[in-house]
Length: 287
Ligand code: NDP
Image (cartoon, rainbow, N blue to C red; front, side, top):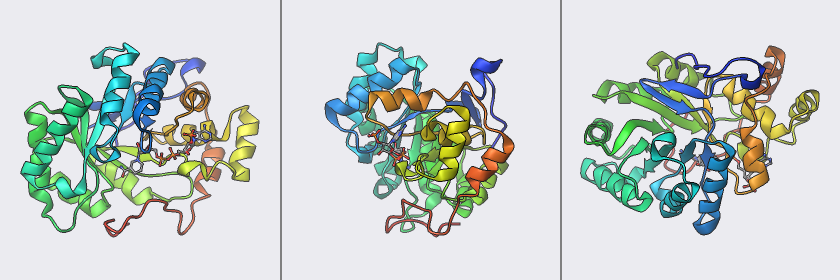
């Protein structure tokens, strides 16, 4: 993973606002939309964009692409200002299916391209290389400005890089203080691939940790802001989900303070065996 780019200076901008990704620049803080549906989803997207977010994460599987598209439109923010990610479900990775899935996502979003098209999960029952080449073809034909993967282990990322004939911009994976992701983080760094943290708040389960609460008190911040700042200072992007306007704004107000090295280490020290929260039956053999 390349070093994050600081797009500001001085105390009002303590950290990167974009993460470099093999030619892409991914806004470091995005809105997750899993489980947001219909008008609630459109309203959350509109609220987030008004609060300053410029990165929205959806997927074909979330069943909310129409609502995300409606929220984008209602925001009045120009298309070229927002980084939109969608994903192809793991059962649609045969090349013709992948293309059809991407085209259907664009129809539902009412967009002519997405900024990032991800393979949502690897599928051990399909050969990887043809899927990666189809993903790259989706970029060449203009369906996506950038392409990438999600839930890829070190070995799968190596295989994807070997098969790709376009840059792989990102690997979106679960990451929060309960989960040690050093192996995947270092593979991403080695390949120049951005790491995007999903479940960055550990589904809000990490927020009650005494260590995180103590650091929050020190900085006069909320536990969620401390955890999101911890992600950003590692040079990763994070996509917290909230449907609540107050928490949507709270989660974005993380660019004006800095955690000390010992605070970063104390939060990382919360990693534990069994800390993974998302492990469906089709998961790869995790690192
Ligand atoms: P998160 O870690 O983002 O946690 C979301 C939960 O935290 C919600 O219950 C939310 O409630 C609560 N919350 C949000 N902000 C705050 C706050 N400031 N204080 C207290 N509670 C808060 O988990 P997700 O599972 O939603 O992951 C985030 C996103 O990552 C998803 O929405 C999706 O876009 C993506 N994702 C990708 C996956 C993949 O396979 N690639 C898998 C899983 C997720 P409320 O809404 O009420 O605020």
